[in-house]
Length: 287
Image 1: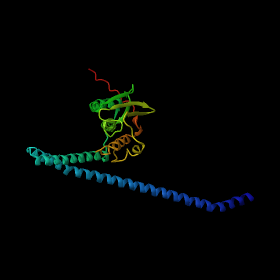
Image 2: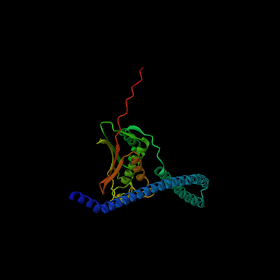
Image 3: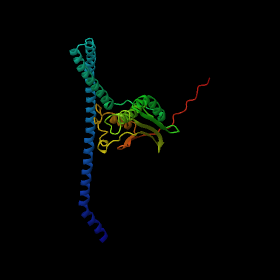
């Protein structure tokens, strides 16, 4: 009987404790539910803002195109005259044209970044994509006195990707690297100095690993913390959307991107993408 009474007494004593635990747990669950609901509303709000911003950008582009056309026509009219007054007007007009062109480029970059990606996925050998991109970019690299090299895996590296988007993401990195090694405000780099740009592709632990390595001036710790921020740029006239766009493309492919840099020694971007099974071999039709 002593055991029974001890059990009953224990239940009576512990009852308030269990009630308190239940109340605490219910509050935690309710609080978590509220946070999840707030996050969902926040995401919906961001999606709506993205749609509005994209629509606004399109609305700006339409009159901007008309402005650009008329500026071009005015410029052609002014070129018929060779006196100083008309020449001064033409120089001012060309400055306005340059700013209008820059605004259009910013809008194009924004629409590429904020727009919805309709990806056309197919299994591709990443080595082939990098090889094609290197051939395309070689003249620009040579113009900047940059030696472009590739180090590709001996075996195919298959990934399910949108080839055009992946090329765009890599091209952004290659352009940034080349400009860093040739622009006057790039620290040790400058016109005529150049450097080396290496694109490496290999497979490791179920992932494709793409590295974009340059021997430029490097990125300071203060700047490297901000390079993924939208509209942040250290380049004069830069839109600040190249790297955010690259990261978004990689994330859309369920991949990752990170950066390592050392002042005076260069910068290394590392991209990983999930590997895909090799595509089936299609037999040649019989003659």
